[in-house]
Amino acid sequence: MERYSESLRFELCKKVPQDIQEAIVELQGIVGSRKNIKKNYIYTDRMNVANRVTLLWKTVFNSTVNLDIKKHKDTYRFYIKLDESYYDLLEWKGELPDYFLRGVFIACGFISDPEKVYRIELIPINREFTRYISKALDSLSLRYNVYGKRVYINGFSNAERFLSLIGVQHGILQLEEVRTMKLIREDTNRRINFQGSNIEKTLRTSDREIDVINRLMESGRLPERYIKVADLRLRYPHATLSELAQLSQPPVSKSTMAYYMKRLEKIANAVNKDRP
Image (cartoon, rainbow, N blue to C red; front, side, top):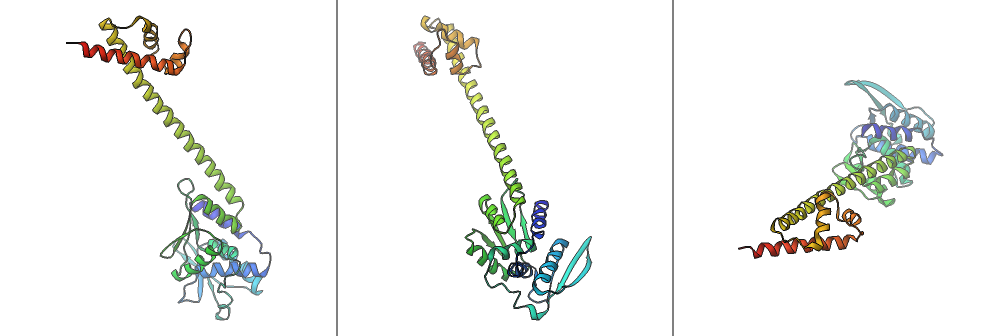
């Protein structure tokens, strides 16, 4: 869901780095995700990402970035030139994987519509960079799958833990709210389907019992002791066995009412066998 992904990115981009180490590791995640190994620049179509790089760069190197903005289709693309003297500093060495993954998500992360599926995708420009992402996820014991240059984190618990580790707070509340509403709808649908199935079953059983009673009455073989039970069923054709049991005078148990109906069915079957 693009709008939800952008809300998470916006929340992360507002975070103030606590120290230079946090800033440089996050910057390594962003740069690594957006860098083409054959070119000395990174680019993004998102202004908040470009602003984030500018902030982190100033924090780490105390200098401004070489930023170029160009028209691209119906929007703008932000190009940031990288000085070769910074290459070694911008390569992730394995420390602070949570902050590194924050930078990765800011630069190339997406989350699917949680109404449909819980899945986070990390899609760096360079396929080789997925090994760094995998290393970070492994160090945090997060489950994931890699297909080409896409890294997938599937399932609600995995997605929630990933977002929590990279510093998302408000976005997790939204995710939990969506999940709660989804579970409520699913439970309601199950109940409706269950009730519908029970109603159909009750109606089929009632139709069979009424047919049995009618056949016994036509043949004059309805036992006198079951006349009241038969009358109840004919008067309340849509009632369940439990309801019929309560309507009986005196009331009986559901199992007793079920026994009466089975006896009537056996008698009706015997009558059919006796016919020439």
